[in-house]
Image 1 (tube, rainbow, N blue to C red):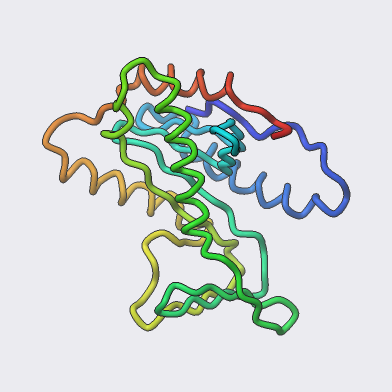
Image 2: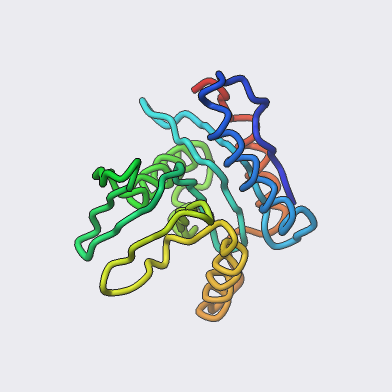
Length: 200
């Protein structure tokens, strides 16, 4: 089910391309999960966490936890080396960038910290898994490290398969149902929607 769509667009002309990418990802998620009883989606979520703000492009809630989808802005290509260093190819030049996987995990930890402080049942979110998925536009070429493709990175067209595979892994390894029932996910989604700060 889709609990939160993208906020209305209020950017400038230079922000249009980024919004179109966000719209495409939100469309993919709506197409796959709008009638789902297993996965709930919140798009473009900003919640305060201490002195910071957790900024999540797309959040998927499922019975075992949270999956944060982070969109990587467009470029001509990406190169990831075996040490986890990332470079993007822009106009023929390789430019070093921080790891989007690390950035997504930081946003996940900020979100978890916010939730830990907000619930009455202390420690509840310690049993909730937090995963990340960095999504690259389909047309971007990726040069993977020698060790192969990274589990946390995929093209937009691969998102549904990657999410499905991850949930299957949770189900296969679980000895009991996940901590988030459908009702709890709905309560959590409602709370996050109320906590959203668009301008943050």
